[in-house]
Picture 1 (cartoon, rainbow, N blue to C red):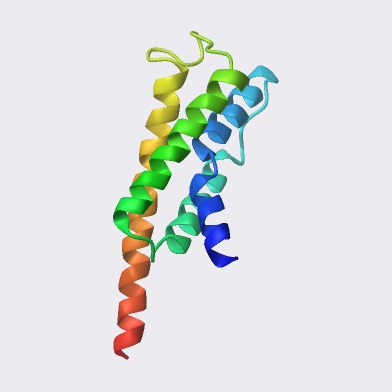
Picture 2 (cartoon, rainbow, N blue to C red):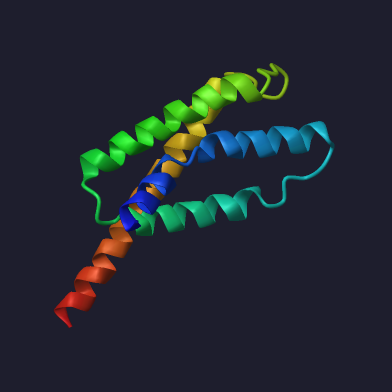
Length: 121
């Protein structure tokens, strides 16, 4: 059960949801106030949960998450040139995915270091 939850969290298409929420907030003339706190929360949770995964599996799962986000983005988010300029919707999803994975790697490293220090004590 624990492994299934880890896989679900690693494959959760957060990059898609980030832009889906942001773009729909833009369309309804509202501020996307929960965007950054949720981004940080997901980075921390997924980084801590994935600390015991092999690095190759970690990158493979995040690559699949990015691919799933791109597929969902293609079907559910319009490629609005005025909102996603200058690069477009797909590059914006990949850009957010890059920082999402980078944040997970940082949290993962910090979490591993803390666990190692606890084991030494």
